[in-house]
Image (tube, rainbow, N blue to C red; front, side, top):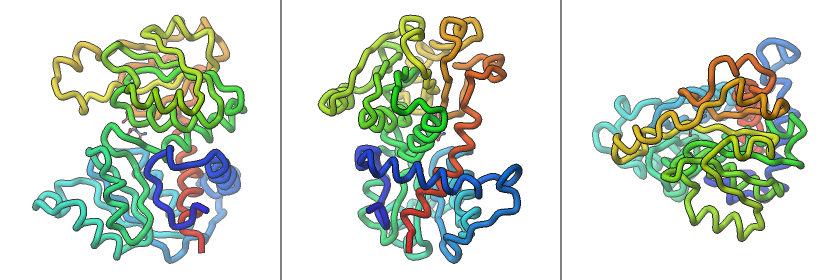
Length: 309
Ligand code: NCD
């Protein structure tokens, strides 16, 4: 059902499809660990296949975890990791790049500053395109690893989650909110007035039956949720740096704040800047580093399903 498909937006998934990907990730997790229980185990599921990582925006985790996922499955990777060193710097348009690169590889992961770039690329590609982040649009594989983390913590089916921070420009929040509406989660949107979840997304979510509460204050919601999903204020998306300065540093999770809900699980797609106090990293509430690790089995699942023979 998902084989050879493009992955552009979490809106394109059914709940059954997401559950299928997450269960495949569970099967493959044993191959994801270089140390520990999976040490020495190898998979050759994608032997002979090539992933092209086209990243026209900064990335650490997403690009590396796509690369590791492909390699752990026996596949190979080619990379463009900076627009300055590719023909984009000579003025080549994305369409021509995709036309050519899709003949060099079996699957493409694309990160691009323009919203809609992946959907456009998909229509010119002869191989599946995975959206690895398109401007302020979507980041569907991040959502899959967020859901995987929630599933592993046994929280996916009774979820009350606060999405906190930059809900206007944050593509991880957009993708996650859509997917969570399939799981009947209660959604709390916490952001400064200027960075609220876009109206059209809220309308879509309400149409899908989502239960939404909005606030500008974490304290107002912390007792009512089991998960805090923090996001970075997306400085690079602000047309005017003065507007960024007005909202920078609005939220900060501290060990004192967590005392108000000792069981709360804290997630973050990373990178985090100043929205989580360093002391919080040491608490059992902080789950964002294991969340980032889950990017490996989840991307292994996505790649193996899309390229199934
Ligand atoms: C996120 C992104 O690129 O949207 N990072 C990631 O992929 N883990 C979040 C962010 O940059 O703030």
